[in-house]
Image (cartoon, rainbow, N blue to C red; front, top):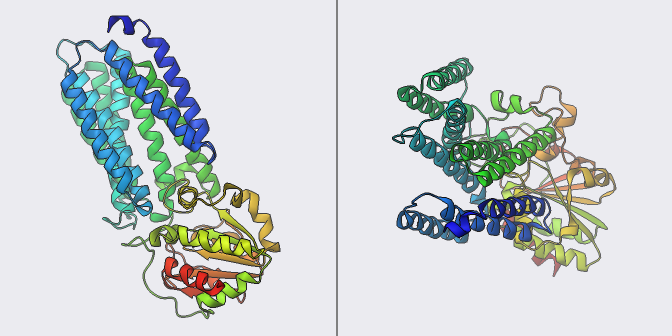
Length: 460
Protein backbone atom coordinates (compact mmCIF):
# COMPACT_ATOMS: atom_id res chain seq x y z
CA UNK A 1 0.00 0.00 0.00
CA UNK A 2 2.83 2.40 0.83
CA UNK A 3 4.30 1.78 -2.61
CA UNK A 4 1.06 2.91 -4.22
CA UNK A 5 0.62 5.82 -1.82
CA UNK A 6 3.68 7.65 -3.16
CA UNK A 7 1.99 7.84 -6.56
CA UNK A 8 -1.39 8.95 -5.17
CA UNK A 9 -1.16 12.54 -6.42
CA UNK A 10 -0.33 11.36 -9.93
CA UNK A 11 -3.28 8.95 -9.94
CA UNK A 12 -5.58 11.69 -8.62
CA UNK A 13 -4.34 13.96 -11.41
CA UNK A 14 -5.19 11.31 -14.03
CA UNK A 15 -8.61 10.83 -12.42
CA UNK A 16 -9.25 14.59 -12.49
CA UNK A 17 -8.36 14.73 -16.19
CA UNK A 18 -10.74 11.84 -16.84
CA UNK A 19 -13.53 13.72 -15.01
CA UNK A 20 -12.92 16.77 -17.21
CA UNK A 21 -13.01 14.56 -20.32
CA UNK A 22 -16.25 13.02 -19.00
CA UNK A 23 -17.92 16.43 -18.82
CA UNK A 24 -16.66 17.28 -22.29
CA UNK A 25 -18.05 14.03 -23.67
CA UNK A 26 -21.40 14.47 -21.96
CA UNK A 27 -21.85 17.87 -23.62
CA UNK A 28 -22.72 16.10 -26.89
CA UNK A 29 -24.92 13.07 -27.65
CA UNK A 30 -22.15 11.71 -29.88
CA UNK A 31 -19.60 11.78 -27.06
CA UNK A 32 -21.91 10.90 -24.15
CA UNK A 33 -21.14 7.18 -24.14
CA UNK A 34 -17.38 7.73 -24.06
CA UNK A 35 -17.82 10.51 -21.53
CA UNK A 36 -19.56 8.10 -19.19
CA UNK A 37 -16.69 5.64 -19.58
CA UNK A 38 -14.12 8.31 -18.75
CA UNK A 39 -16.08 9.22 -15.62
CA UNK A 40 -16.37 5.60 -14.47
CA UNK A 41 -12.65 4.93 -14.99
CA UNK A 42 -11.77 8.12 -13.14
CA UNK A 43 -13.97 7.18 -10.21
CA UNK A 44 -12.55 3.65 -10.09
CA UNK A 45 -8.99 5.02 -9.95
CA UNK A 46 -9.99 7.48 -7.24
CA UNK A 47 -11.54 4.80 -5.04
CA UNK A 48 -8.63 2.38 -5.45
CA UNK A 49 -5.91 4.92 -4.67
CA UNK A 50 -7.88 6.26 -1.69
CA UNK A 51 -7.62 2.78 -0.17
CA UNK A 52 -3.85 3.06 -0.53
CA UNK A 53 -3.55 6.42 1.23
CA UNK A 54 -6.24 5.98 3.92
CA UNK A 55 -4.82 5.33 7.40
CA UNK A 56 -6.02 1.94 8.70
CA UNK A 57 -9.20 1.68 6.59
CA UNK A 58 -11.89 -0.79 7.65
CA UNK A 59 -11.75 -2.80 4.43
CA UNK A 60 -14.69 -5.10 5.23
CA UNK A 61 -17.03 -2.22 6.10
CA UNK A 62 -16.05 -0.12 3.08
CA UNK A 63 -16.18 -2.98 0.58
CA UNK A 64 -19.52 -4.08 2.00
CA UNK A 65 -20.95 -0.58 1.59
CA UNK A 66 -19.60 -0.31 -1.98
CA UNK A 67 -21.05 -3.72 -2.88
CA UNK A 68 -24.45 -2.84 -1.44
CA UNK A 69 -24.46 0.48 -3.28
CA UNK A 70 -23.43 -1.20 -6.52
CA UNK A 71 -26.26 -3.75 -6.27
CA UNK A 72 -28.87 -1.09 -5.50
CA UNK A 73 -27.54 1.27 -8.17
CA UNK A 74 -27.30 -1.45 -10.80
CA UNK A 75 -30.84 -2.63 -10.11
CA UNK A 76 -32.19 0.93 -10.26
CA UNK A 77 -30.34 1.65 -13.50
CA UNK A 78 -31.81 -1.43 -15.18
CA UNK A 79 -35.38 -0.99 -13.94
CA UNK A 80 -35.93 2.78 -13.91
CA UNK A 81 -38.43 4.04 -16.46
CA UNK A 82 -37.59 7.12 -18.51
CA UNK A 83 -40.54 8.86 -16.86
CA UNK A 84 -38.87 8.30 -13.49
CA UNK A 85 -35.44 9.63 -14.49
CA UNK A 86 -35.98 13.18 -13.15
CA UNK A 87 -36.92 12.04 -9.65
CA UNK A 88 -34.14 9.43 -9.74
CA UNK A 89 -31.59 12.17 -10.46
CA UNK A 90 -33.02 14.27 -7.62
CA UNK A 91 -32.79 11.31 -5.26
CA UNK A 92 -29.14 10.75 -6.23
CA UNK A 93 -28.41 14.39 -5.39
CA UNK A 94 -29.93 13.84 -1.96
CA UNK A 95 -27.48 11.01 -1.28
CA UNK A 96 -24.51 13.24 -2.12
CA UNK A 97 -25.82 15.86 0.30
CA UNK A 98 -26.41 13.27 3.02
CA UNK A 99 -22.88 11.89 2.56
CA UNK A 100 -21.45 15.39 3.00
CA UNK A 101 -23.42 15.88 6.22
CA UNK A 102 -22.40 12.52 7.69
CA UNK A 103 -18.72 13.06 6.86
CA UNK A 104 -18.79 16.53 8.40
CA UNK A 105 -20.44 15.21 11.59
CA UNK A 106 -17.91 12.36 11.80
CA UNK A 107 -15.04 14.83 11.40
CA UNK A 108 -16.42 17.24 14.02
CA UNK A 109 -16.95 14.48 16.59
CA UNK A 110 -13.67 12.70 15.83
CA UNK A 111 -11.98 12.35 19.21
CA UNK A 112 -8.56 13.93 19.37
CA UNK A 113 -8.93 15.75 16.07
CA UNK A 114 -8.23 19.47 16.25
CA UNK A 115 -9.61 21.73 13.54
CA UNK A 116 -8.07 25.07 12.77
CA UNK A 117 -10.12 28.02 11.52
CA UNK A 118 -9.84 27.02 7.88
CA UNK A 119 -11.08 23.49 8.54
CA UNK A 120 -13.93 24.70 10.77
CA UNK A 121 -15.06 27.01 7.97
CA UNK A 122 -14.90 24.15 5.47
CA UNK A 123 -16.91 21.90 7.79
CA UNK A 124 -19.49 24.63 8.31
CA UNK A 125 -19.79 25.31 4.58
CA UNK A 126 -19.80 21.68 3.42
CA UNK A 127 -22.24 20.56 6.10
CA UNK A 128 -24.90 23.23 5.61
CA UNK A 129 -24.77 22.98 1.80
CA UNK A 130 -25.02 19.20 2.10
CA UNK A 131 -27.94 19.43 4.54
CA UNK A 132 -29.84 21.87 2.30
CA UNK A 133 -29.09 19.67 -0.73
CA UNK A 134 -30.38 16.56 1.05
CA UNK A 135 -33.75 17.93 2.15
CA UNK A 136 -34.28 19.99 -1.00
CA UNK A 137 -33.55 16.97 -3.19
CA UNK A 138 -35.97 14.79 -1.23
CA UNK A 139 -38.70 17.42 -1.69
CA UNK A 140 -37.87 17.65 -5.41
CA UNK A 141 -38.06 13.85 -5.63
CA UNK A 142 -41.49 13.83 -4.00
CA UNK A 143 -42.75 16.58 -6.33
CA UNK A 144 -41.38 14.99 -9.49
CA UNK A 145 -42.59 11.49 -8.63
CA UNK A 146 -46.11 12.70 -7.87
CA UNK A 147 -45.86 11.59 -4.23
CA UNK A 148 -46.35 15.23 -3.25
CA UNK A 149 -48.23 17.94 -5.10
CA UNK A 150 -46.36 20.17 -7.52
CA UNK A 151 -48.19 23.24 -6.24
CA UNK A 152 -45.80 25.70 -4.62
CA UNK A 153 -46.02 26.56 -0.96
CA UNK A 154 -47.54 30.03 -0.86
CA UNK A 155 -48.14 32.76 1.68
CA UNK A 156 -46.68 36.03 2.85
CA UNK A 157 -45.01 34.17 5.70
CA UNK A 158 -42.81 31.96 3.46
CA UNK A 159 -40.06 34.46 2.61
CA UNK A 160 -39.71 35.74 6.21
CA UNK A 161 -39.35 32.13 7.38
CA UNK A 162 -36.66 31.53 4.74
CA UNK A 163 -34.76 34.63 5.88
CA UNK A 164 -35.04 33.79 9.59
CA UNK A 165 -33.87 30.21 9.01
CA UNK A 166 -30.96 31.35 6.83
CA UNK A 167 -29.82 33.93 9.40
CA UNK A 168 -30.17 31.45 12.27
CA UNK A 169 -28.20 28.82 10.34
CA UNK A 170 -25.41 31.29 9.62
CA UNK A 171 -25.48 32.55 13.22
CA UNK A 172 -25.01 29.10 14.76
CA UNK A 173 -22.43 28.28 12.08
CA UNK A 174 -20.44 31.39 12.98
CA UNK A 175 -20.67 30.47 16.67
CA UNK A 176 -19.28 27.03 15.89
CA UNK A 177 -16.53 28.61 13.78
CA UNK A 178 -15.46 30.97 16.57
CA UNK A 179 -15.86 28.63 19.55
CA UNK A 180 -15.89 25.08 18.07
CA UNK A 181 -19.10 24.50 20.05
CA UNK A 182 -20.46 21.10 18.99
CA UNK A 183 -24.01 21.92 20.03
CA UNK A 184 -24.02 24.94 17.72
CA UNK A 185 -22.81 22.73 14.87
CA UNK A 186 -25.69 20.28 15.36
CA UNK A 187 -28.27 23.09 15.61
CA UNK A 188 -26.86 24.67 12.45
CA UNK A 189 -27.18 21.32 10.64
CA UNK A 190 -30.77 20.84 11.83
CA UNK A 191 -31.75 24.34 10.69
CA UNK A 192 -30.10 23.74 7.31
CA UNK A 193 -32.19 20.59 6.87
CA UNK A 194 -35.38 22.56 7.53
CA UNK A 195 -34.22 25.40 5.25
CA UNK A 196 -33.77 22.90 2.41
CA UNK A 197 -37.49 22.17 2.57
CA UNK A 198 -38.49 25.83 2.62
CA UNK A 199 -36.23 26.61 -0.34
CA UNK A 200 -37.85 24.04 -2.67
CA UNK A 201 -41.44 23.77 -1.40
CA UNK A 202 -42.36 27.29 -2.69
CA UNK A 203 -41.13 26.45 -6.22
CA UNK A 204 -43.80 25.36 -8.69
CA UNK A 205 -43.75 22.57 -11.26
CA UNK A 206 -42.83 24.88 -14.13
CA UNK A 207 -39.42 25.54 -12.57
CA UNK A 208 -38.49 21.95 -11.69
CA UNK A 209 -35.96 21.48 -14.55
CA UNK A 210 -33.97 24.43 -13.18
CA UNK A 211 -34.32 23.06 -9.66
CA UNK A 212 -32.82 19.70 -10.69
CA UNK A 213 -29.78 21.36 -12.27
CA UNK A 214 -29.46 23.71 -9.28
CA UNK A 215 -29.46 20.76 -6.86
CA UNK A 216 -26.81 19.15 -9.03
CA UNK A 217 -24.68 22.23 -8.45
CA UNK A 218 -25.37 22.19 -4.69
CA UNK A 219 -24.29 18.55 -4.42
CA UNK A 220 -21.02 19.37 -6.19
CA UNK A 221 -20.16 22.24 -3.87
CA UNK A 222 -21.03 20.09 -0.85
CA UNK A 223 -18.64 17.39 -2.09
CA UNK A 224 -15.90 19.98 -2.73
CA UNK A 225 -16.29 21.41 0.77
CA UNK A 226 -15.93 17.98 2.34
CA UNK A 227 -12.95 17.32 0.06
CA UNK A 228 -11.09 20.06 1.92
CA UNK A 229 -12.05 18.49 5.24
CA UNK A 230 -10.71 15.11 4.14
CA UNK A 231 -7.72 16.71 2.42
CA UNK A 232 -8.65 14.80 -0.74
CA UNK A 233 -7.65 16.68 -3.89
CA UNK A 234 -9.68 14.60 -6.36
CA UNK A 235 -12.86 15.10 -4.31
CA UNK A 236 -12.25 18.85 -4.36
CA UNK A 237 -11.71 18.81 -8.13
CA UNK A 238 -14.67 16.51 -8.90
CA UNK A 239 -16.96 18.49 -6.61
CA UNK A 240 -15.89 21.77 -8.15
CA UNK A 241 -16.49 20.40 -11.66
CA UNK A 242 -19.99 19.23 -10.74
CA UNK A 243 -20.77 22.44 -8.86
CA UNK A 244 -19.61 24.79 -11.60
CA UNK A 245 -21.15 22.77 -14.46
CA UNK A 246 -24.45 22.60 -12.58
CA UNK A 247 -24.36 26.34 -11.98
CA UNK A 248 -23.64 27.02 -15.66
CA UNK A 249 -26.46 24.70 -16.72
CA UNK A 250 -28.85 26.44 -14.30
CA UNK A 251 -27.86 29.79 -15.82
CA UNK A 252 -28.43 28.49 -19.36
CA UNK A 253 -31.85 27.15 -18.43
CA UNK A 254 -32.84 30.34 -16.63
CA UNK A 255 -31.78 32.28 -19.70
CA UNK A 256 -33.97 29.99 -21.81
CA UNK A 257 -36.88 30.91 -19.52
CA UNK A 258 -35.98 34.61 -19.44
CA UNK A 259 -35.66 34.38 -15.66
CA UNK A 260 -32.93 34.98 -13.14
CA UNK A 261 -31.76 32.21 -10.83
CA UNK A 262 -32.77 34.32 -7.83
CA UNK A 263 -36.25 34.70 -9.29
CA UNK A 264 -36.56 30.93 -9.65
CA UNK A 265 -35.32 30.22 -6.12
CA UNK A 266 -37.21 32.97 -4.33
CA UNK A 267 -39.99 33.74 -6.79
CA UNK A 268 -41.27 30.64 -8.49
CA UNK A 269 -43.34 30.28 -11.64
CA UNK A 270 -46.21 27.96 -12.33
CA UNK A 271 -48.56 26.39 -9.90
CA UNK A 272 -48.83 22.96 -11.39
CA UNK A 273 -51.25 20.70 -9.54
CA UNK A 274 -51.39 17.64 -7.38
CA UNK A 275 -50.62 15.32 -10.23
CA UNK A 276 -47.90 15.30 -12.80
CA UNK A 277 -50.32 16.15 -15.50
CA UNK A 278 -50.97 19.84 -14.93
CA UNK A 279 -53.88 21.88 -13.81
CA UNK A 280 -57.26 20.27 -13.50
CA UNK A 281 -60.45 21.32 -15.16
CA UNK A 282 -61.46 21.61 -18.78
CA UNK A 283 -61.29 24.80 -20.81
CA UNK A 284 -64.78 25.21 -22.26
CA UNK A 285 -65.05 28.87 -23.12
CA UNK A 286 -62.92 28.67 -26.29
CA UNK A 287 -63.47 26.81 -29.52
CA UNK A 288 -60.95 24.37 -30.88
CA UNK A 289 -60.74 21.85 -33.69
CA UNK A 290 -60.11 18.17 -33.10
CA UNK A 291 -59.29 15.34 -35.45
CA UNK A 292 -58.20 11.73 -35.56
CA UNK A 293 -54.82 10.05 -35.77
CA UNK A 294 -55.67 9.10 -39.36
CA UNK A 295 -56.25 12.78 -40.20
CA UNK A 296 -52.87 13.67 -38.74
CA UNK A 297 -51.17 10.84 -40.58
CA UNK A 298 -52.66 12.00 -43.89
CA UNK A 299 -51.55 15.61 -43.34
CA UNK A 300 -47.98 14.68 -42.46
CA UNK A 301 -47.55 12.08 -45.21
CA UNK A 302 -48.47 14.76 -47.76
CA UNK A 303 -46.18 17.41 -46.30
CA UNK A 304 -42.71 18.34 -47.48
CA UNK A 305 -41.44 19.15 -43.98
CA UNK A 306 -42.48 18.10 -40.47
CA UNK A 307 -41.08 19.27 -37.14
CA UNK A 308 -41.84 17.19 -34.05
CA UNK A 309 -41.89 18.95 -30.66
CA UNK A 310 -41.65 16.35 -27.85
CA UNK A 311 -42.59 17.00 -24.23
CA UNK A 312 -43.10 15.22 -20.93
CA UNK A 313 -46.31 13.56 -22.17
CA UNK A 314 -44.16 11.63 -24.63
CA UNK A 315 -42.12 10.24 -21.74
CA UNK A 316 -45.20 9.40 -19.67
CA UNK A 317 -46.71 7.28 -22.45
CA UNK A 318 -43.38 5.70 -23.48
CA UNK A 319 -44.13 6.72 -27.06
CA UNK A 320 -40.62 7.55 -28.23
CA UNK A 321 -40.01 4.23 -30.01
CA UNK A 322 -43.34 4.36 -31.85
CA UNK A 323 -42.67 7.99 -32.73
CA UNK A 324 -39.29 7.11 -34.21
CA UNK A 325 -40.89 4.35 -36.28
CA UNK A 326 -43.47 6.84 -37.55
CA UNK A 327 -40.78 9.41 -38.36
CA UNK A 328 -38.78 6.78 -40.26
CA UNK A 329 -41.83 5.90 -42.36
CA UNK A 330 -42.37 9.60 -43.14
CA UNK A 331 -38.72 9.97 -44.13
CA UNK A 332 -39.04 7.00 -46.49
CA UNK A 333 -41.93 8.85 -48.15
CA UNK A 334 -39.64 11.82 -48.78
CA UNK A 335 -40.77 14.00 -45.87
CA UNK A 336 -38.06 16.06 -44.15
CA UNK A 337 -38.52 15.19 -40.46
CA UNK A 338 -36.76 16.95 -37.59
CA UNK A 339 -37.16 17.19 -33.82
CA UNK A 340 -37.18 20.54 -31.97
CA UNK A 341 -35.88 20.55 -28.38
CA UNK A 342 -36.52 23.30 -25.84
CA UNK A 343 -33.94 23.58 -23.01
CA UNK A 344 -36.60 23.14 -20.30
CA UNK A 345 -38.77 20.52 -22.02
CA UNK A 346 -39.52 17.64 -19.66
CA UNK A 347 -38.70 17.50 -15.97
CA UNK A 348 -34.90 17.73 -16.02
CA UNK A 349 -32.12 19.17 -18.19
CA UNK A 350 -31.69 17.15 -21.39
CA UNK A 351 -34.73 14.98 -20.65
CA UNK A 352 -35.98 14.97 -24.25
CA UNK A 353 -32.50 14.40 -25.67
CA UNK A 354 -32.09 11.29 -23.51
CA UNK A 355 -35.56 10.10 -24.45
CA UNK A 356 -34.89 10.39 -28.19
CA UNK A 357 -31.42 8.85 -27.86
CA UNK A 358 -33.02 5.83 -26.19
CA UNK A 359 -35.23 5.44 -29.28
CA UNK A 360 -32.11 5.76 -31.51
CA UNK A 361 -33.32 8.90 -33.24
CA UNK A 362 -30.49 10.07 -35.57
CA UNK A 363 -28.60 12.91 -33.90
CA UNK A 364 -28.71 15.03 -37.05
CA UNK A 365 -32.52 15.12 -36.83
CA UNK A 366 -32.48 16.59 -33.31
CA UNK A 367 -32.06 20.37 -33.16
CA UNK A 368 -32.04 22.86 -30.30
CA UNK A 369 -34.39 25.83 -30.10
CA UNK A 370 -31.86 28.37 -31.42
CA UNK A 371 -31.10 26.21 -34.47
CA UNK A 372 -34.63 25.47 -35.57
CA UNK A 373 -36.83 28.40 -34.52
CA UNK A 374 -36.28 30.29 -37.76
CA UNK A 375 -37.51 27.27 -39.77
CA UNK A 376 -41.01 27.01 -38.29
CA UNK A 377 -42.46 29.63 -40.64
CA UNK A 378 -41.36 27.50 -43.63
CA UNK A 379 -42.63 24.22 -42.18
CA UNK A 380 -45.77 22.47 -43.44
CA UNK A 381 -46.73 20.59 -40.25
CA UNK A 382 -45.61 20.75 -36.64
CA UNK A 383 -46.49 17.79 -34.41
CA UNK A 384 -46.56 18.84 -30.74
CA UNK A 385 -46.66 15.67 -28.69
CA UNK A 386 -46.94 15.94 -24.94
CA UNK A 387 -45.59 19.51 -24.75
CA UNK A 388 -47.42 22.62 -23.62
CA UNK A 389 -45.59 25.49 -21.97
CA UNK A 390 -42.58 25.47 -24.33
CA UNK A 391 -44.85 26.26 -27.33
CA UNK A 392 -47.19 28.71 -25.60
CA UNK A 393 -47.46 31.93 -27.68
CA UNK A 394 -48.41 33.85 -24.53
CA UNK A 395 -44.68 34.03 -23.81
CA UNK A 396 -44.42 36.38 -26.81
CA UNK A 397 -47.75 38.19 -26.78
CA UNK A 398 -49.27 38.38 -23.29
CA UNK A 399 -47.47 40.80 -20.97
CA UNK A 400 -49.62 39.59 -18.07
CA UNK A 401 -48.58 35.97 -18.49
CA UNK A 402 -46.16 34.51 -15.91
CA UNK A 403 -44.04 33.19 -18.81
CA UNK A 404 -43.96 36.44 -20.79
CA UNK A 405 -40.49 36.97 -22.26
CA UNK A 406 -39.57 33.29 -22.08
CA UNK A 407 -38.11 32.08 -25.41
CA UNK A 408 -40.34 29.37 -26.87
CA UNK A 409 -40.38 27.00 -29.82
CA UNK A 410 -42.36 29.07 -32.33
CA UNK A 411 -44.60 26.23 -33.50
CA UNK A 412 -47.47 28.69 -34.03
CA UNK A 413 -45.70 30.03 -37.14
CA UNK A 414 -46.02 26.76 -39.05
CA UNK A 415 -48.74 26.27 -41.69
CA UNK A 416 -50.46 23.50 -39.69
CA UNK A 417 -50.06 22.53 -36.03
CA UNK A 418 -51.12 19.14 -34.66
CA UNK A 419 -51.25 18.76 -30.88
CA UNK A 420 -51.42 15.37 -29.17
CA UNK A 421 -52.85 15.62 -25.64
CA UNK A 422 -55.02 13.58 -23.33
CA UNK A 423 -57.35 16.54 -22.73
CA UNK A 424 -57.58 20.32 -22.89
CA UNK A 425 -56.07 20.66 -19.41
CA UNK A 426 -53.30 23.18 -18.84
CA UNK A 427 -49.62 22.26 -18.75
CA UNK A 428 -47.34 21.67 -15.78
CA UNK A 429 -46.97 25.40 -15.21
CA UNK A 430 -50.75 25.64 -14.85
CA UNK A 431 -51.24 27.92 -17.89
CA UNK A 432 -53.70 27.65 -20.76
CA UNK A 433 -52.24 27.69 -24.28
CA UNK A 434 -53.67 29.89 -27.08
CA UNK A 435 -51.94 27.64 -29.63
CA UNK A 436 -54.70 25.07 -29.07
CA UNK A 437 -57.39 27.47 -30.30
CA UNK A 438 -55.77 28.78 -33.48
CA UNK A 439 -57.49 28.10 -36.82
CA UNK A 440 -54.35 26.31 -38.05
CA UNK A 441 -54.29 23.97 -35.03
CA UNK A 442 -55.91 20.55 -34.63
CA UNK A 443 -56.15 18.66 -31.34
CA UNK A 444 -55.71 14.87 -31.34
CA UNK A 445 -56.87 13.48 -28.02
CA UNK A 446 -55.58 10.26 -26.49
CA UNK A 447 -52.57 8.52 -25.04
CA UNK A 448 -49.53 9.59 -27.06
CA UNK A 449 -48.32 6.05 -27.73
CA UNK A 450 -51.75 4.87 -28.90
CA UNK A 451 -52.16 7.95 -31.10
CA UNK A 452 -48.75 7.45 -32.74
CA UNK A 453 -49.43 3.76 -33.30
CA UNK A 454 -52.69 4.71 -35.03
CA UNK A 455 -50.73 7.24 -37.13
CA UNK A 456 -48.40 4.44 -38.21
CA UNK A 457 -51.39 2.36 -39.30
CA UNK A 458 -52.59 5.34 -41.33
CA UNK A 459 -49.38 5.31 -43.38
CA UNK A 460 -49.83 1.71 -44.53
